[in-house]
Image (cartoon, rainbow, N blue to C red):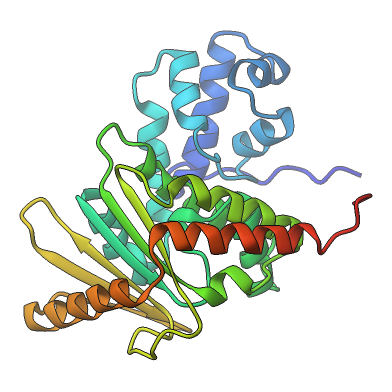
Length: 282
């Protein structure tokens, strides 16, 4: 038996306000969910879930809705409020800086960084890391992280530089199929006008960055702030001397990491490894 939808509270929840406004706009122009699904290329199930507050509006649906309804940036603005509502508080300031940054440099020891993750990878990661969370909660985390990747698609994106520990390529998240898709998604970004990816191999010297994640965010005024994160904690560092020291450590890590060409070769090798992990019939 189908469970009744919960009562929406648009006054108290940006997510509920989004759902109420979607239904209102759709009904104003007399569109069924089936027709709306055809227009924005999202499933009827997903659209119904957004309208009832059971699902988060996965990007880039907000832009498509604004275009379909002629509502300017209404739904894009509502999505910004929804994101703020669901972002972990400790990471909020980092997200604000990330949105303004002209250069983003990140080191991740054992996981693919969020800006580079495929939807399948992040969903598997969240499911494993939050075993008690509902599917709706996982949807929220996935949508929030996917929205960050809009930064990659700006007309004038920041300069990106990622260093990945070799463990990030070898640690299976989800399944070999998920890893194949994830590593394949890395290759086009290894060496472009706006992005560089290097792999720090296991044989590289130990350093202070070996555990966790560090993100260096440089703003238009050339100031740099660092966010570092480990298991159960995250902190912003903006002391100039401390940031300068961390920037030097990052530069040294670049020197000892594989070149972009060598990194691409290792990623391709690992991709072949995951292809051989599954039988031809899977």
